[in-house]
Image (tube, rainbow, N blue to C red; front, side, top):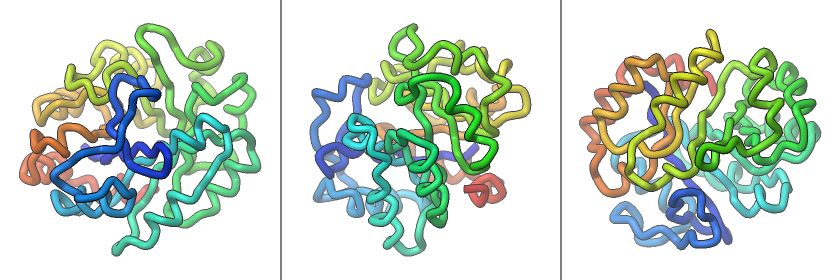
Length: 241
């Protein structure tokens, strides 16, 4: 299973995301980095394990629907440069195209940012693009047709349970199983609530391809040894950015 560390950005700093309550997010305090600057926290995470890919949610860009790719340029200066899954509130096919053209960047389209399901038709032109199915509680965040039209989903789909982000309450296994069944041969990625290696092994047994993780890496619950054990054999997936 591929483990992808999450970097949530607000006011240009990495913040501690919790339960999707963005108005209360504060700059992250972590033993892995002295400062909450994006590059410093990314380097701190790499001190635990040499992660090949990061997931960045630029909350300012998502809120303003700007499609800002500045985070990609900043992390591109790391050595080696990581692959980047970037959610920046892409408002149009043009902004999606700009992000997709950047080396190593896989643009993430959050359902909460979509106005209708017509945007799904653009995925065929951008094979690295990823769809995030966002949920707030039991409610789907976005047009219901986006959730219903699984035939238009791209090859990679994130199941983002915002109420479990940073909560250490465990993934939403039932919802993940439901989406996995509907997704067919597509890769399904879990986001929200991963606590430990036991959760990751259960996700792996379900056929989940990857997990977005933050809190359990920062607090040390997921050790380098546990991460290395889960990441073994993921080279092919990691290179598919």
